[in-house]
Amino acid sequence: MYLLKTKGTTKIPDYVQVRDNNFALINHITLNKINEYIDTLDIDNKQKIKDIIKKYPFGKIIKID
Image (cartoon, rainbow, N blue to C red):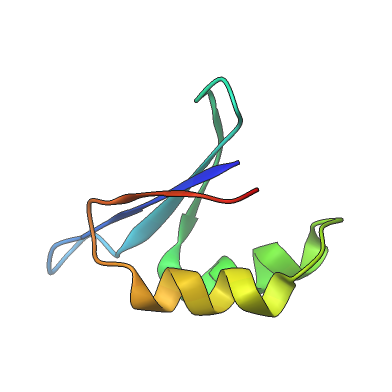
């Protein structure tokens, strides 16, 4: 799974793109709702993923194993 943070504007919020291993778009979530989305996933280390998203800058692709 890959995550990509995109910076919004004054009218468009910040988003996180969730992509699969083939880099196909799975979901496009506002940054303020990403915690709710991660909680619904059936994966380990949910808190670690949340922390990674907070730390990474916008425009960088994050690979989650």
